[in-house]
Length: 155
Image (cartoon, rainbow, N blue to C red; front, side, top):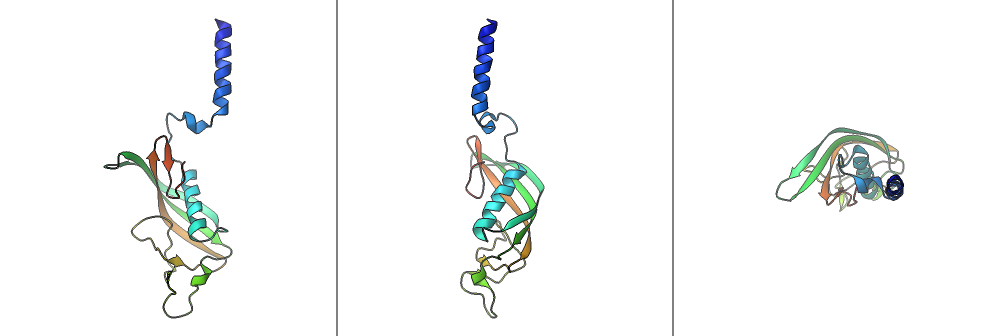
């Protein structure tokens, strides 16, 4: 009987070691601040510039959501971040006096990456070398055993 237990435990250990840890998540499986940072990074690189670098990322608050009516759980993070844009962003939108170019915003005081009341949908010009502070939020929606970020990726 002892040999059977040893063989069974050995097989289980080999099997468990070959499967990612997230596959066994039974408790405390919600998204983490590192996941929120990755979503933010993906959105920054997509909306502004692929060479942007996050210098600071601090989650200020977070909590689980009960998304009533949608039939699934959610998780929300609020954060502040500083991002350096070595090459700038949306250089085609550089102001040249007068009205902004079509598809470009004249707002240079508020920047956001997520869906919220104040989101600026037009492209925003960012001067090369600038560091922009974001006070933003991101949300995850539970899909099965995973969480979908606002960048469309599963975490």
